[in-house]
Image 1 (cartoon, rainbow, N blue to C red):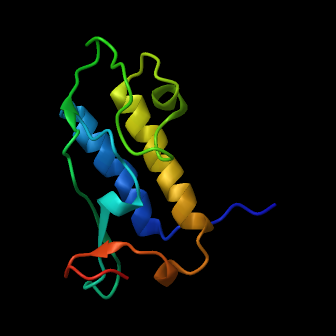
Image 2 (cartoon, rainbow, N blue to C red; image 1 turned 120 degrees about the horizontal axis):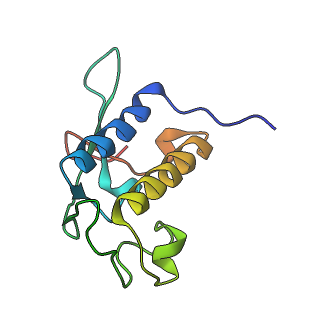
Image 3 (tube, rainbow, N blue to C red; image 1 turned 45 degrees about the horizontal axis):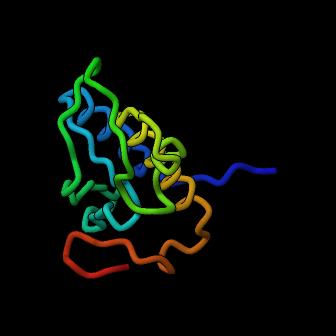
Length: 121
């Protein structure tokens, strides 16, 4: 079975999460609807993470989070199970799950990803 491939530019979203986590910022609601894509650059795309409404400052060593946070169907298993969870780990899981979803979509134009100009593609 062949692994689906993502445009290399989407991989930059993993660096964006790492950057946020280095600043002790967690998103806690990573999903396709919270990604904005700028297609205006002809040679590549630029991906932005938006909607930090349930975001939280979290330093390693802080108490783990409890309770459900995020969007059902897009959260890490430990969040869905309502156990104690690390929001940085949950962000990484949700981003990987989101990227896997996008890789499985054969026609990127068939999904609604917000674009920088405000329209959906």
